[in-house]
Length: 354
Image 1: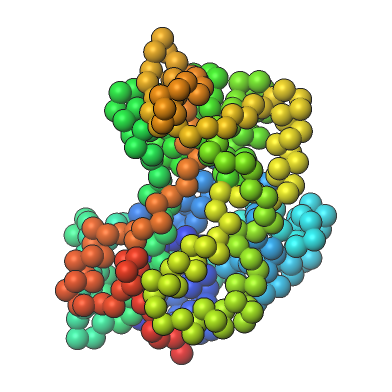
Image 2: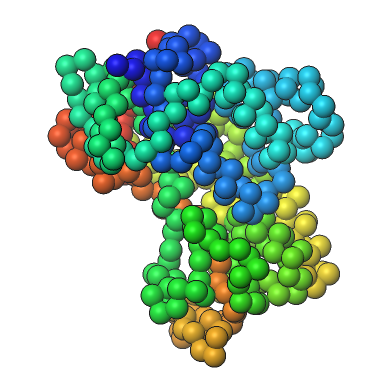
């Protein structure tokens, strides 16, 4: 029996694994990490590689290690140029440096020894812990079960996009589809739906490959913010009042309102403007209500059925569904054991790891 079972291989799952191992809460042979992918951070690396994100949006103290300046120390002790490893006043790390730091930690901690590739079918409580059954029939038993499931397998498809996909699935994709074909396969011109950071990175990448054949179609003006949320939420300035709030519905509203949703940092905005001035990239404002395919082109219309734009291929950069992931096996478990949850569906965490 394992001491800890972690379900999820993303940033949060690897951060918890690092914490448990480095704080000596568990030995590597007492830890099991369950995930359907072959190795840690697979979805993270796939998604960031697809859009060719050069630098993270978060500062250098955000990483999977337990020491705040671990990433900076890693850069200093290796053959990285400081000026290219970090960007701007907040020392935003390059994707390469961030990923290599993660790989370095996971190799040193022998994380792969704890790896169990598979998908969870269901989990049930036992007198001495938890029993997790995988879809292939394997059983994993542990004293503690930690869920670190992200929403990366829940891409948002607007209703009009789903309708269009049923008509002609070769004309529309979500950029984070697991089966996304090569960009060379796409009919051009290409239109990206979305106005946030994913759309911006993707537009910069594609406009360099297919200049003058890429358009961003967005619902709102570009929203310029350095971070996804105010850094004050990381410390007591905003956290103290938040923790005093007893209503979980109000807490969720505060979290939702605190996010700078669909925003991009200033440096990315400047790069987009440069591409637009050079004629490599086009911008169209409008909110799509429906679409159709005619003469091998996708025609998009607004709520008043007014024509907005046409394209050869539509790429959705519309983010992920914020709802509870893993519902198919989590909801039965929540109901069976009457686990406390907020109205949004997420569990209410009431303990700390000692």
